[in-house]
Image (tube, rainbow, N blue to C red; front, side, top):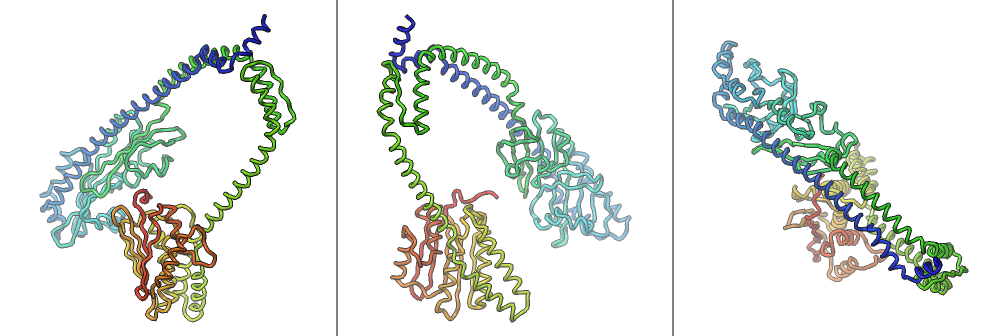
Length: 597
């Protein structure tokens, strides 16, 4: 009777067996529901934590703005205080005069008494007749040489926020620094207001997450953790790319603990720079409670899976032996044994498969060998073609000018002194290094222009007054990232053709300007120009699918790389007439081209 049951079950299609097993076990519903609930719970915990952290940072930002706004308001009052300017600029005959003048001007002390948001006010002047009363200070040479003092004088109309030391207690404070124009023309004093550090720390101490206030020099000016105070942001081993961000939410590892970092910037009006509020909280602390529920849910899921497995196993064991025999024969065929013959009884899919298997094995070997050989040939051919194409595009820059420059340097060294030769050798070395290090990654336009300038200086050393060049570059485009060696081949072409049959010498103009949403590059020379038939041949060479041996490849190299990088519409455009010089131009889209440093 058992044999008849087994035979009957073997005649049932495998699809029905699997459906029966999964319906009995309900494995898929358990997995889906458990996984969904687990993911939702973790996500809810993260969302709640991020919302709370964002709220905390907003609250800190508002309270911090209120504190530093006091310093800003007082600085504007003092900058317009005629009595203070007269006091700081007056030439005193005796100590008594200074003391009397200080007694008649109690405003700074009144500000300190009335406003707890500031801890000190001092004005640095260049008046040797003043006495140092910690409010009006004759600036020493050390103070005048400090970065914050010189920066304030160089930026007369701006307020800056600096983390500097107070001469009284030799502690560092977040300070407002700005210049005040005194009564005499072009004579300035530097005003410094210390923000009350205790008040900033008090604001942060009420927060549950680790929070700090950081200036634009990465100094931690306040924090609710004692071991973070008076340190730099780099001491916390955070990712450097994250530390340069002004705002946003990031993931980081702090002291080996995965954490979330929330950054927001506080930049008061009319300020040159600002400060950042950074809140850090570990991911483990967020999901601590949800993890308990998740572990319970996982326990239930595991028990359900075990029960489902037992149910599936009890059903699948009825045909597992037949499947195992089929698997063994397939493995033998996979190992190259095509003489095997499979005998499995039954009328279900496994029995049908066993009969079809035997008829299939005889043809598999030849087909596999043919396909394998064909695929291997195609793969090798494609790989070689890709390597050849990449090398042709990345390293086809004509180096002849380097050898000519070296020969000119050798002759100049023989006939002259060493100073000029040293400069040219330095430029040549810098340019050769840039060429050797050029890879597939993009570089800032400023770096590319430095290499072009090196090339032109070397060529001008060689040709002296016969070569003139000019750069017209929009400063805002210097941070644009471009492929390496994208301008130098075009400039080299302009120099070569500008000097050909031109007694007056070559004049090269490089212009890079913004036009709409693109940066327009234009290289112009005053050469003899290109005849129409030669221009047609040149344009055909640029568009040829394959490079022709013996042709100049510098222009085509740049043309192809521009089209591969930015699209078909971004190739070279060449305009030239005999006797009127040549202009080569191309455009690079600004979207995606401007990258933070």
